[in-house]
Amino acid sequence: MITERVRKHAEHLAGASELPAFVYDLDALASDAAGIRQALTVPGAPEIFYAAKANPDAPILRTIAPHVDGIEVASGGELQHIRQILPDARLAFGGPGKTDDELRLALELGVERIHVESPHELSRLAALAREHDRQVDILLRVNLAGDRTGVALAMSGPFGMDPDLIEDCRDTLTDNPHVRLRGIHAHLASGLDAEAMVNQSREILEWARPWLAKADVTDPEINLGGGMAVDYADPAHRFDWTGYARQVAALAQPGEKLRIEPGRAVSVYAGWYVTEVLDVKKAHGQWYAVLRGGTMHIRTPVTKQHNHPFVVLPRGGSGPAVDDQPVTLVGQLCTPKDVFARQVPTDHLAIGDLVAFSMAGAYAWNISHHDFLMHPKPGHHYLSDD
Ligand SMILES: *Cc1c(COP(=O)(O)O)cnc(C)c1O
Image 1 (spheres, rainbow, N blue to C red):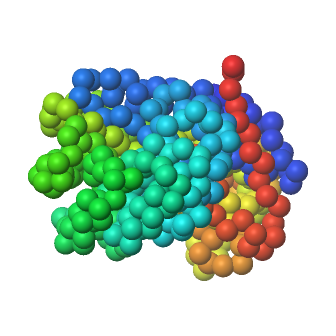
Image 2: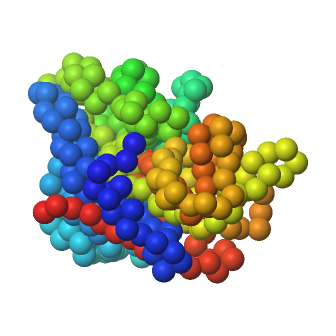
């Protein structure tokens, strides 16, 4: 649950000037990314682009980059940021509501694929490409209905085009040779285990093949999206990359190029949010531990409505403590929603003890509302033996 490197580092952090802190283990991240890459070496397995929005910190990106084929960006801001940090990276640009300025930026900075989200976006891109006399390679993003029960997040709503709407793109493509259709993109849900992901991938492939054949696309690319599950209730239970890669590779047909773009499952395990217990008390029959910091730094447990996994690093304090009782871990915000974990059984938790929340390497700091209540910002430590 915590690497030796992070535990040792955390044990030297103390007080308001050093806690809370995000501590990242870059060697663990490299090893996670290399493991995923290794699974994807079976012939026919998809290429992998890392979805930068999961964690776009420069040291994180530099650590992941050697183990992936490219980076998926979801805004002009991410596009500029990644180009600066990884000038040569292959990029795919997705996301709803791309402005003309963002599309122009994509033409200027060199994006390998633009994932087009609507017929109107396609027309605007075609006009810009013509104006700049540039050829752009695109995938059309499809939004298949399907049954997504059991997933963490179904991308229902305005993401991509449903099978009726996407038909509107055919004429625009025929009339605009500056825009070259290379294939289909689909990111339909997140939180799928390997078996569910294989089934979803099959569904996408079966829909995409005849559509692309009718559009005379040869050697099509099919981007199967991200959303590989991580298990916050059991951090040791990881996505079965080997099984997924093997089964999807078996679905691939000659000439096709498959691609995936996970974010969370790549970077989540390499980050910890380390803080300390400020107070311990009982209220209306329940024990609470108030921690320095809060969900304004790591919004993950609020958005996912889960108990965030953690380990306690005892400091042997002699003040108030709770023993063998369920404890609710909260932060410093003046709202009952500032909860990291509810009613978690603990042996012993005392004022001054360190608490290290694991699985804080994705959708943690960068999705949080940092300025709420104006508490000090956490430090960010990127550890590596290299
Ligand atoms: C967010 C996103 C991803 C990555 O999803 P994860 O759940 O982090 O794997 C991939 N593709 C698109 C289009 C996304 O919006």
